Image (tube, rainbow, N blue to C red; front, side, top):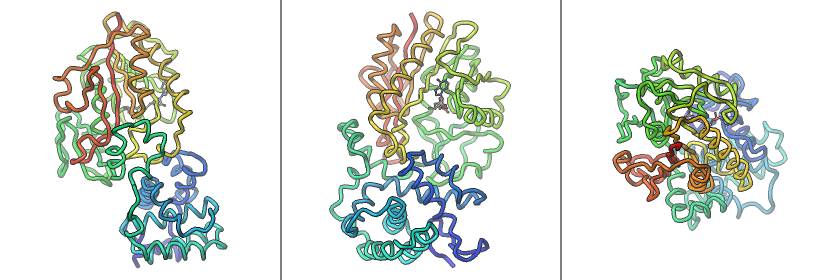
Length: 433
Ligand SMILES: C[S@@+](CC[C@H](N)C(=O)[O-])C[C@H]1O[C@@H](n2cnc3c(N)ncnc32)[C@H](O)[C@@H]1O
């Protein structure tokens, strides 16, 4: 029965002969990312094949599509010698799904080839079914040897990002080749879930692929999903009980929750209604609904009734620091996107400054590895009259490698590589005069 679906489940079954929701959904995702430059998650949500699919099929398709995107450059290079001319993009997507299964997932080669041919037929690509069969058979014959001599790290990162990451490019690329673990921030007093490793940040770490909603304690709000690095910016704002703090770009609310559990009076501002709904769900699950005020609106124009003690600005950014979890970002973002993002970051920085009382603190953070969104924005903030308030070695004693000479936080996926790495974050702290 096992036809080698990436989650080890059969291709056929109660859905009827020939049904293969995992690969159908994965195809929609890969096409959504490569053809329409839509994010992986958005492509999954919009996949016609995903409608009505069960959670396990969706999860398996997500993993398969993410594997394609994580190895996109390498998989393309593997196909190169076997293609006389460039096939149409949908055919290429079918081939990439086949290559990912043969070389990067434990799918038996005959199943990877056979299911790719069926996928091509179901997607109206029957004239190319022979090509798919022939090319993937040759890839399967070559096996791991197809990867000989390929610089996979280099191939799987677009050149503009490789250049921008400088000396860190290779270690980061190596780390991006691996799936990210599941990191959880525990509510105060909650126990570490069984089997989890407790990290120096206080984060509980579980293996990649763990389903959070199935963990005991999830429904009761004992923890929330938050990468180890993502837990640092809110902590570095050092919110005190009773302080008035705004979290300007709040959804889905991981940092809002940290601030609220620290005892601050938190106002969470979020512009997107759909994301605000997720923030509300998370606050409800964590029992924080009564303790956090929420505002659906634009943080560049919102102003508090009275000046604040602190502001956390977790600004929208290129999100290249999250590429381990979202390998699509590497292929969707373009250099020209940075300009609009940095202009938005500056508008938010200026708004944040104007919300603070004299002496009030601002932590600016981005989950980006790009210098334009990190150090260059910290300098722009200083030019706006915000006074740098460097992080100290004591504050970052659990992660001294992340403290820069300027007193900024700079994490990247190759830090803690031996225990699963972390997302790339930049953060800097300021005070208002
Ligand atoms: C990086 S995410 C925030 C993640 C969040 N801080 C957390 O830790 O869970 C950025 C969020 O800012 C929101 N956003 C972007 N521009 C905004 C604006 N001008 N005003 C309010 N929210 C905004 C986006 O919709 C998105 O939900």
